[in-house]
Image (cartoon, rainbow, N blue to C red; front, side, top):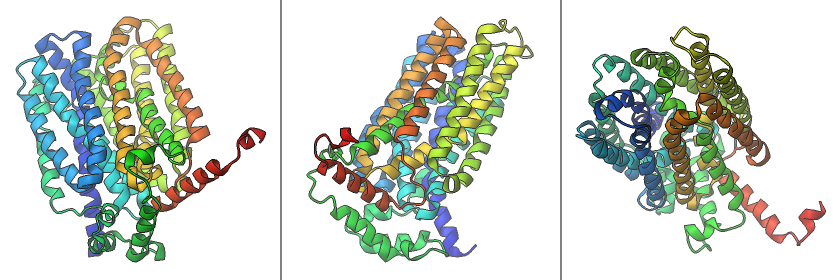
Length: 471
């Protein structure tokens, strides 16, 4: 590997490191909540509050990060998120009460929401077209790696029940991210918009593959970015552009993918798998160790997805993943209703529960986990990419909050069967949404995707009234 390739990969890895923090801070609570509940005597509502406070903060962080990323740049915002991560992690670890813990979890959420928006944006904008899916998927690989690290830390500290150390260790990778981003470049697309074309050219040279054709030449890429920018010069603002007819289909797709990714129930597993396993006969430590299996599968299948996303395409992967998730949730829900309540981890329902949770994770991690974060920046126009992603990611975290806050309450009130069957029904709706509305973006530059949206929007605006109905 020559110096050029090594430098490009270094940029991609550090750019994705924010995902590791995202994953650790969202994953560590799954084990910590068992011991926090014992220490603070939490009710089901307060268990949900400790978990979901991060998600409310993430909604705010995502809403603020969108416009800020367009103004100050992607790189600076990642650095600000790293500082916020550090403050939140140390504060949560030292929390003297449940109320203070909830407050610092919300601070962590500000950073998580910012990272969830700006990291895939950074990677998508800095990556060459032919490997953009794989590079953008590195964000999800870092997320699931962070979750796995959190599960390992939970397992190591389970015997001591030291939830404070579990939470506080998040400060270590956040400081690594902060230092690393000092040496990373801004994205070429943001630099061109800021009038810094020479610096953009240097960045494009750094990340350009050796075998790249003319379409990846820095001069050609800068011209593409400039043309996309000029097409939008007559718009008054990012918010006014969001109201344009040609932008609406892209916004609908982005929002739909972001919301469905949560409503199919992924974080009932990431946050509450040990809680679910303890309800079917596992002990606290046994549930945390079993959760490690889920974490390993999560990482392994994400690596597989990175290898497939630029070959198979985005849309087929989304559809196949939904089939696997719906089947896993259906079997889990039905078995919970028809089998006897388990008393140990060796009972049939306990085994089926673990297998179904693992099956769901395999299906999600190989498809919806990385593909959604790849597609969000792909389908949105350059001049509003940050703001529009802010809308989509804010709603993503709102959906995450609703699922995470309601799950322990629904599980306590209704039982596992109806809850998981409800998530399966949402998965069917997601399948219909993807089939009908989601475009394929594989192998197309961001500027080509935007130009196609504008052409299609222009045709719709010129179409006489009644023509669509006549067809």
